[in-house]
Image (cartoon, rainbow, N blue to C red; front, side):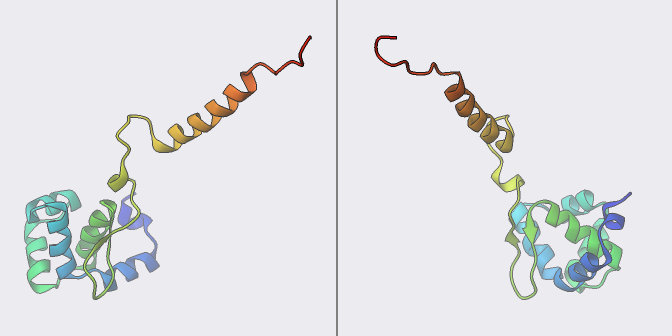
Length: 126
């Protein structure tokens, strides 16, 4: 099932009213993407991206595909504002190969296990 079909009707309506042609241009600049790259990533025609960014007039499905693809990169869109970075795992990847949550859990569990495995202090003379 496509991501467009999985998103709710309300989410789609919000995106259609919030995501503008200017957002597309600004978001591409933030990501360092060309129109061709955005078109490839969103599975739309390059001409559709060009038309949207120049005219602001494309079908809802194309507009949603562009917006959802850019949101997948961690960008958020609000009317009247430049795109911003949302709370995205992509932007804050750990440098280790271990996922952050697992690393935290293993450190917490490791310290708890280390304390549990430590010998119990004995009173003097025993």
